[in-house]
Image (cartoon, rainbow, N blue to C red):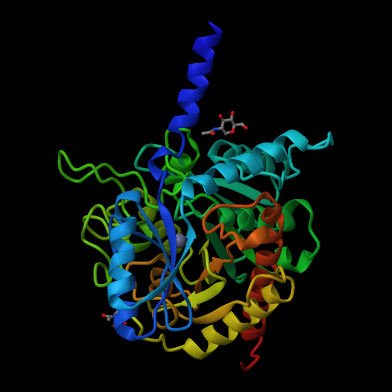
Length: 432
Ligand SMILES: *[C@@H]1O[C@H](CO)[C@@H](O)[C@H](O)[C@H]1NC(C)=O
Ligand SMILES: *[C@@H]1O[C@H](CO)[C@@H](O)[C@H](O)[C@H]1NC(C)=O
Ligand SMILES: [Zn+2]
């Protein structure tokens, strides 16, 4: 019996994160546009974590079988690189361990249902429970809305937060969304923190008096669940749509390439790619649900922020590199938000950069951010929240250090507040 239990535990320990055993995280320093293009067009089985530019190293996760080949190729091309992690599985285990320690050491305190536990990243069930509890406790301010189902039938839920039940159509709407990409766990606290400050622990009453808010914490519920279950994959990015033809083992559509804006111009047609745009624009239930929200409130949403990680950036459209007609205003608001975050960020994180996503990062089409612009939202952005760098400068990338959770929520909230204030100033005729 004892032996049996032991093998079960061992079996579990062996299985978890096993597919990442020996995967290496490379940081690559590109020095000219040819090298930028070479790096940024790496595709499956390579997994780009951070696009490269002349100002910033690229980061890519390379499976064990390709590590040597990739090193040879970089050497042959004369591209400098550093291996940040020789075995990313160790970092995955470190994340598990840090969270387990937090769970064990949690001092006994009376946590009521509405007090967020910043020692953990809520899973899908916990997020939905929390949304329900807030809605139940504050029925005059909060409405829990089901925006539809995911491909695998999970609810896509959002909160409408309003002191006037969304009836005062003169109030601008601010729309915040997180976890369109499943593995970007650190973004969830940004949504939860906003809900807390708008509903439960209100410090700025004018933010609720003057605006209506839509907060969609888990835009990709299937993908997100898959990053949490033991036989899933912590680094899953896309949704969980089944392969398009029988025998195709590659699942999932990159939801942030599936919107009907410049669709398929700058994204992958290859189902295995992390940036696979899907069979057609809005082929996915998750993107269709977001589209429907954007159109339901078209003309009222003045600020839309699709929150991703990582890289400390505030980005705006178009993803093709063209600038929208109000680019100056968009940039000015972006700077205000970035300054507000920088003022309270962790010292070791660099300042936010603000700019057009194609110029700062890489061309991409079919994004939620661009679709927001197309749906007549004057201020539409991607935030790329910072990655955590631990003791000894260990790069966490998509992994979360528990000590950064509340901070990520707090500092992002400062940016969102600055964005809201900008909306008011523009409306009152303030010239940027
Ligand atoms: C989510 O959290 C709940 C409660 O903490 C737990 O019972 C459940 O097993 C978790 N689900 C996953 C997929 O980890
Ligand atoms: C992308 O779409 C926008 C909005 O429709 C359009 O203005 C722009 O010309 C398109 N970009 C390209 C490169 O086609
Ligand atoms: Zn993302």
